[in-house]
Length: 171
Image (cartoon, rainbow, N blue to C red; front, side, top):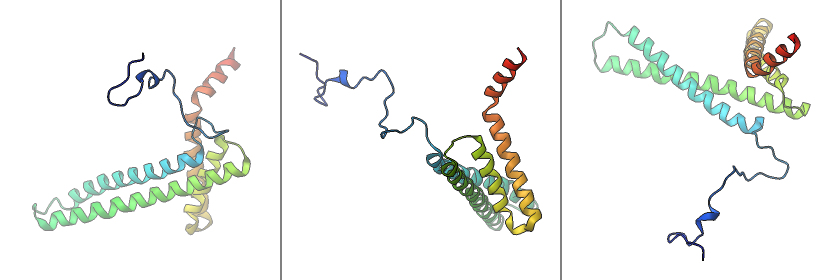
């Protein structure tokens, strides 16, 4: 007779798993796609923006109010700066992540491929759209900034592959 767990009335041997098992729909990959990662990207950027804005505004608030004594007006002024700047940076980075993710998903679905060209194109288009209120010069600067940042990310992401292919070419 098999030993049963007195709490679950289940044979505990069935609960032990040697390999990772996931419940996946038919035809699904074990890696997350661009759409699933979009939510993580947006949330992470909002949190990073809020943290950066809070720390930066706390530093600026302490610097600007250093001549004041510790009192309620100083505390309120610092608190207002922290709240305002934290929300501003969170909204800005969250919006950039939303644009980047939306462009990335649209480009991936249009091209039917999941590669670094999608990343670079999405970053370039995000920069261009974000700075479109600055005229053609602003669009060019935004696109160049997006192109540069996403190209550096793609290079970092594929560094081991590139290093291996360069090593094979030198032999």
